[in-house]
Length: 226
Image 1 (cartoon, rainbow, N blue to C red):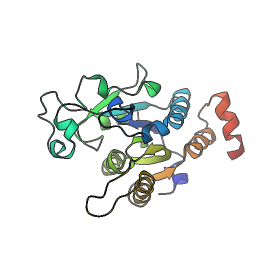
Image 2 (tube, rainbow, N blue to C red):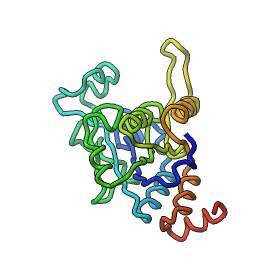
Image 3 (cartoon, rainbow, N blue to C red):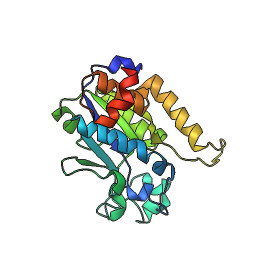
Image 4 (cartoon, rainbow, N blue to C red):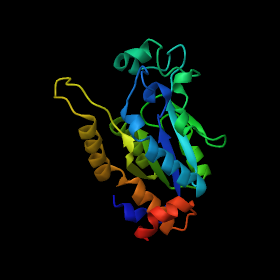
């Protein structure tokens, strides 16, 4: 999908799984790559908030008793042991550097796809948006799953390539893949099957061209693209 085709979109920004259990150093499911996109996330959040673009968070959580784990019990030992992603714990709170504001909802999800068994679709339609901008982690898992969920519900999506991140994959029988390789592979798949892919710079410039009010620093950064 060509990003320029979304110029008339009514956007909402979705921040996926940027929880302490994934992002903090030493966390049980730590992906250090998540800290590497923090500055870009902060930037796009500031632009969205300044421009009145709805901001929504999605956080992967599970019940204390584990009754909603399903196959995740077999996939992630710390989750099965109740050491990570426990609803109500500090670990599922959004990382403090990009914490939601009081009016920004946090959608609790139990699977990769942020739409599955949640009220995300209702929230988006309540905002009157038709295009969801995807950020967060991991590119090949919950971001890709949510992009597919958006497609299946009639939403367009934009994946911000430098505000999403993957992780290293070990060799489980088909060879290892580095975080960079996995990230790029997922972006390529989504660009063909579900989503437009853009950088934060490109997205901010598009908002500027669309007349969304930006802060002074962002006006300077995007002037060259107008």
